[in-house]
Image (cartoon, rainbow, N blue to C red; front, side):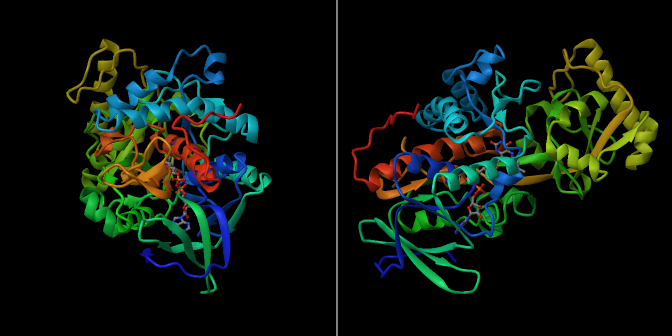
Length: 476
Ligand SMILES: Cc1cc2nc3c(=O)[nH]c(=O)nc-3n(C[C@H](O)[C@H](O)[C@H](O)COP(=O)(O)OP(=O)(O)OC[C@H]3O[C@@H](n4cnc5c(N)ncnc54)[C@H](O)[C@@H]3O)c2cc1C
């Protein structure tokens, strides 16, 4: 139970900068604060830092990077910001979006140069809503590798990461200054750690069914595919401290999680020319809109199930993702030489499936749009043998959260920063607005890495009581 107590206890230890959560946001915040000379302690409830970061594909969007330049990709932060705002129908604060878009390239280059992350550009697939190739990832394209490399970098930088340290209570003064945190240990003991500045990097409330039901009722019973430890502590603590929250109904869903295997199947399978059908063998949506809003559409199909159908060429593209390779290894990817065999293997009505696939190919050949509005012009044909995966829709993570300023300081409803509280990643209000459709691929890790960096630097400055500029310089 996350609570705030307005009292100042005796502390067992003190940390100038204390971070709750060791996912991408917390570890980047710790590295940034450490880079500015602050001593940092990170509290992580799990025995090993994983978080939703480890469940992700680890792809971070960034505009104007050297990797894009090397690949001849033209891009810049303004263009990136336009894409984010267009996807979210201009709901997010444009200043937040501009700040994160402008931080994206220098922070990624800093992670590569100062902390050895082996970053490269995903150059064979453009994610829906992005007007340029701008997804970057580590060699395995897995979030597990991302969180492991960040943890190793933090350890190398002498960041203290306390695992098995579940933050349960914040202590604050009457003017909302957080003086420290109580942690519960696996053996049932408690410790209290005082702090100069606190960074909340404990993600959102996707793992808290009661909060999901309150803020996102249509996803109350959906499979939650994020990290179960993300119980909404940041929002609950922030509310108790009088902080502002925004867009609590915002979330990222995903309409393509292999079922029952529980493995993410990249949306590239559909964007590259694949389609989804339901148990009746019929399509039900424009798959090119995006995977986030597709979740509710898949959940609404009979049994909450759909089948993603593609071919060997597309499987070759998808195979760059560790998740897809896992799905193949576990038998989630069905192969069939023709539509009739595919229908038999999936248990779908053969005539309906054959009709659906031939109609899709007719539209592709004609470069026409379908009744759902999907434009098939220029989309390559599906060439047998086919591949297919039985999938369901899932809630990945929440996008609403604590309202922050350009330095990731938590604000109250009047826009006044709380004295020493910062939020990053899923703990902060994201840049996806109030609807699932507002989520542009990569918004999750962009806010983790971008706000993490801003929060870490701001917390370090605060812990040294240095004046804080809103455009803190990026380390070279
Ligand atoms: C399957 C999946 C795929 C995704 N793919 C992508 C992608 O490719 N690109 C992208 O941009 N985004 C992606 N996302 C979203 C992305 O993973 C998240 O937005 C991002 O990881 C959030 O980072 P975070 O550091 O805020 O949270 P997390 O990585 O979840 O870290 C939060 C940490 O806080 C800890 N914690 C929570 N409460 C407490 C507490 N009280 N005390 C101590 N510790 C606590 C948790 O144990 C956890 O380790 C994906 C998400 C999922 C689920």
